[in-house]
Amino acid sequence: MLLPETPVHRKSSLLDRVVPLLIVATAFVTETAFAQAPPPASPAQPAQPAPGPTGAPAPAAAQPAAPTVVIVPATPVPAPAPGEIPRPDAPLSSDTSAPSVPGATTPGVARGNEPSRVVTEAPSAHEGHFEFGSYGRVYAASDLRGGTGRGTNVVAFGPRIVDEGNYAELELRREDKWSERVKGRVVATLALFPPFFHFSGKATQAIAVRNLYAQGTYDKVTMWAGSRMYRGDDIYLLNWWPLDNQNTVGGGIGAPIYKSEGPGTSYETVLQVHAGQQRLDNPYQFQQIPVVAPYGFGTVDVTKLDRPRTIETVKLTQFVRPGGGSAGFKAVLYGELHQLAAGTFVDPLTKVDRGLPEDSGWMLGSQLTYFTGKRDTYASLVMRHARGIAAYDPLAVPITFALDRTTSGASETQIALSGNYEQEEFSILYAAYVRFFRDGSPADTSTQKYDEGTAVIRPSVFLGDYFGISVEGSYQQRRLAMLQPGTNDQLNAGVTKFGVMPYFSPSGRGSYKRPQIRLLYVASFRDSGTRALYPVEDVFSQRKAEHFLGIGAEWWFNSSSYP
Image 1 (cartoon, one colour):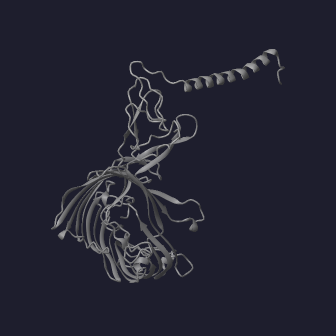
Image 2 (cartoon, helix red, strand yellow):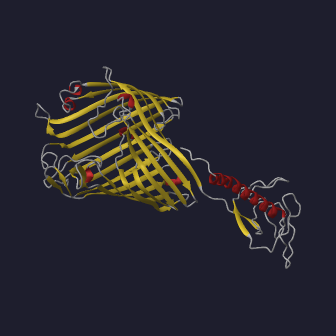
Image 3 (tube, one colour):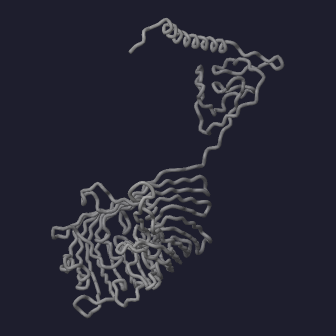
């Protein structure tokens, strides 16, 4: 409902309209008067004329105040054109060609009677840019029986030719350089795991954070902290890092501790130290249980068990280059310490609290590599021995224990050989390893006591600069400390593979040139011991031969995880 208009209302409305107009008019007159009136000259010191924007003498100034120092970038900024009056917020000109007059003011910058002068700032030495990198492999394959192609390995580190599976990493990296001594890097790497949408029909892709860390270099010392795949050299044909391969959240520091360069043999010694933690969502390391809420109704989850595995590593690397050339040797001495704290968890079957004792382990290993520095030709030998919890992969959970429920009796010994040789239109990749694993259980027979090994060779012929064909042959075997069902013989499981792979390599010829677009056929032959490892309902327990025909691609570029 509107109120009736009264004299009071009419009076208020009139004032609301007139008063703002009076304020605006007064401000306009005042500003005009100050703009037209020249500032008074000081009788003690007469003002000196200064050139204005058009070269005419500027109004006389009062007694000069302390000069205002204005710092401007070193990049030149165009001066105002003749006759142009700069905006009050216009940047100062760094042009020094104009005449310098004592007491002169810079047009459009001086405020009141304060003169200004220009000081040029040194250009910044900072350099920064973003980098994108990636590793990936994607396959589609048939078993020539109407199903998809399946992996056939029976050892821990078998040939990757049909068992590597689909996988990809996407890396975004920031590189900064503040000076010749100070550099920085921030790395974020996301991994995509199968099954992809095309083989699940679900828009829920398995994604994991593999790298998320910051790294800084001061002079020759490099420091980092965060989540990182921290590892050394791999054996490509086996998709395996035989010496150091850590996936922890932690930090590390490394630096060359000795370097000698000259016309003769050059030496360089590098020391790296790392410490980090890793924990699996498994009752062996982590457990949450529901309890009655202290207020209200329902339950809340409390952490019953929380014992991450803590890992410390030390790596000493020695480079030797005879004659100071690109060829040379790399010798590595590497060690690890592992610790697990004691804890208590609720048995999911009996609902009774059970104690878990503290556990520990260690590993010591070495590597000797010869490299030519040309066309990725090298040969490498790795040896390592681990005891206790260090004998188990950090991403795996022990399933058997000693009588005190620790892994104190577990051990692992392995020897691995790998290399690549390239010459003109020919190359050959090769790899082999033997591994002896024993769990901590006092039982004489167990699937967790075994010896295993693999040997694989892949020769390739380069057809011009962009095409090639590779053939691969391999044999793998695992010998377990138990009898084969239905016999009195020890259980030996072996698989033989033969494959052929024509490919297109846009980046040129070479065993490690990527990307590669491939056609692939592999035949796998399983013996009776291998077929005995599968349930009788699985067709792998019935068929001796398996086929794999597919098309796929593999790539890597500009990735800090795959240098």
